[in-house]
Length: 52
Image 1 (cartoon, rainbow, N blue to C red):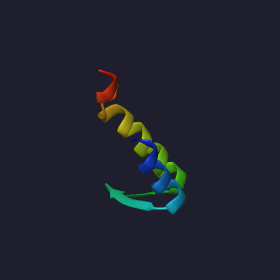
Image 2 (cartoon, rainbow, N blue to C red):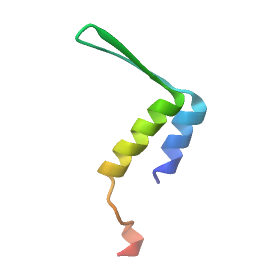
Image 3 (cartoon, rainbow, N blue to C red):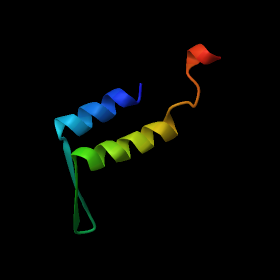
C-alpha cells in the first residue's frame, strides 16, 4: 500500500516547489518519494486489517 505511491513519485520524477518566508525549496524525484514514504509510514496503521 505504501510502495505504490513511492514508486510513482520516484520513477515519475515529480517535483514540489515551496516558498517559505522568502526561502525557495525544491524537492524532486527520490527526495520527494523518501519524504512521502516517511509520512505515509507515520500516518497509516502499523498492522494491515487482514492481520487482525
